[in-house]
Length: 125
Image (cartoon, rainbow, N blue to C red; front, side, top):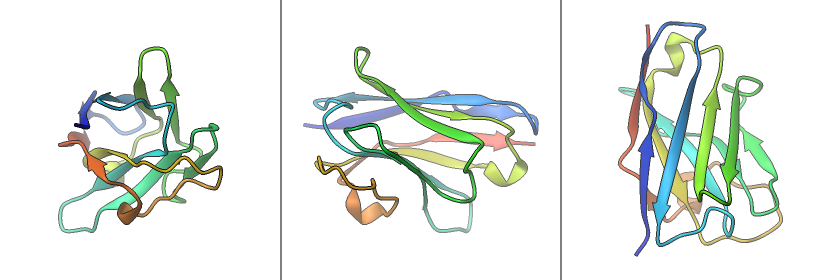
């Protein structure tokens, strides 16, 4: 039974940084593709960063060069480091997990992921 729990959200001023964490149970972050999504009020959910089992990453243009997805295989945690935060980054952030082990570019589409955390709120103002 796979469960994901996000943490690390909060309220910050523009230009500051936050690091989100995703801690799974019943799942190893090293074994499959994982991703971070976000959804702002009134907008569709957006895939922003993903990573495959080989460490290959994929980023949305909206956050490229500001956000970094990574994982600790030893701690079994997925991270999202967010720098230079903007008010437009305000959203609920979700961790997502798949059973995909391929070597290709990890997807940023929500249909590619089977498991979701409850989300953590990030507010930039």
